[in-house]
Length: 146
Image (cartoon, rainbow, N blue to C red; front, side):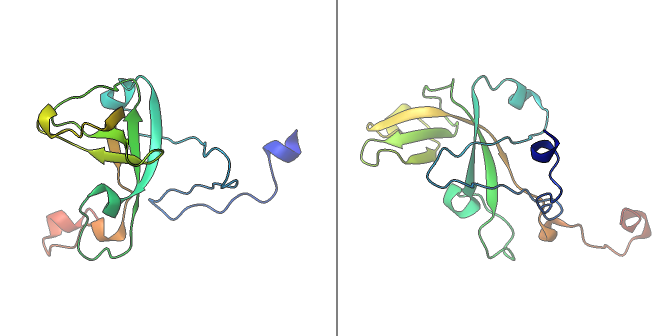
C-alpha cells in the first residue's frame, strides 16, 4: 500500500559520509540491508553477512583526533569457515559461547584450539570522517580540488 511503501515522514538522513541503521526490536533478530562497493572481493563472497563493530574493538587505527568510537562495517564470508594464514577470521571461542572474536594468525599453531571458525573477513569499511578531509597545501594546483 502507499501508506506503508511511501510514508509521509521519512527517517532522517544520516550525516554526509556516514551510515544510519535502526534496530527497532533489540530482542529480535538484527537484520537489514547494507550497500557495499562493487569490487571483486565483495563479488567473490559466497555467503555474505555484515557485522557492525567499533574501531577500538577491531583494532583499526584511526587518526589521533578521533576520540569517540567509530562504527565500521565488516563483511564476512561464512562459506570460508576454514583456517588460512594471515587472514582475518571470525571465531566463536568455546569459553565464550555466543560471542564472536576476530583475529589473524601467522600459523595454525597460534590459532586457539577452542575456537570454531565462523568465516573470513572480506572487507572492512570505514565511514568518511571530517578528519579525513584533505587540508589546503598552499599550492594552487593542489588546492583547486577544493
